[in-house]
Image 1 (cartoon, rainbow, N blue to C red):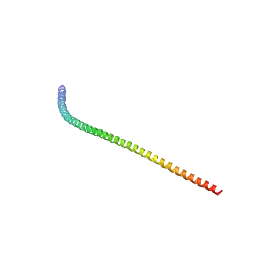
Image 2 (image 1 turned 90 degrees about the vertical axis):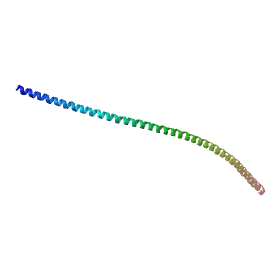
Image 3 (image 1 turned 120 degrees about the vertical axis):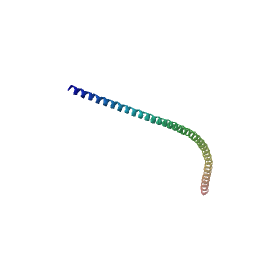
Length: 136
């Protein structure tokens, strides 16, 4: 019985050794797969990093170009606004002078019309007074 037990234990030990070898082989195989994935992923990450850097450079250049265009447009529009402001000021001054001249003409004509009306009124009053004295 001792012999059977010993044979049984030797068989169990041999099975465990075989399982241990298979386990080590599986671990080694998985380690190789992980190393392969690591290399592949590292290469893909490197490629993506390169693309991101290239995109960053390209987009940065485009942003700089747009910034330059905006600055140029801002300067051009500012100059045009200043020019329009000067034209509006000149037009305002011209219209103000024309309105004052027209006001002066109206004042002169108004005085002339008031003078005529006053003259007519005095003439009519004189004629009425003369007619009243003639009737008496």
